[in-house]
Image (cartoon, rainbow, N blue to C red; front, side):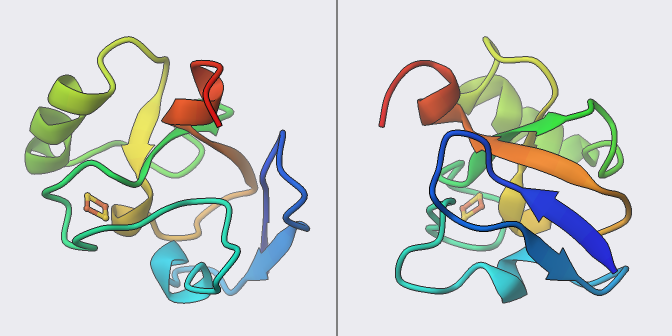
Length: 100
Ligand code: FES
C-alpha cells in the first residue's frame, strides 16, 4: 500500500494500493483535492507533490496543462493523472500559494 498525506488539511492519510489512480480514492465530499474534468484538461486538480518526482513525471500533455495553471509552483502534477507508486504528500496548488 502507498501512503498519501495532505499537509495543511484535516483529511487523514490515505492508503492506496500500488498502481491505483488517486482520483478513484479521492471522490468523497470532503476530499482535499478538487476535481473538474478528471481527464487532464482543466487543471482544477493541480497539486504540489513532495518529494518531487515521487509519483513519476508528467506526460507531455499533462506538462502543457501544468505550464498554464501551475508554472509558479515546484513539482506540480494533475492529481487526476496520478497513480500511487510511492509515498507522497499532496498539497493543492491553491493552498500552496496561500489560498484556501
Ligand atoms: S480534474 Fe481536470 S485536469 Fe484534473
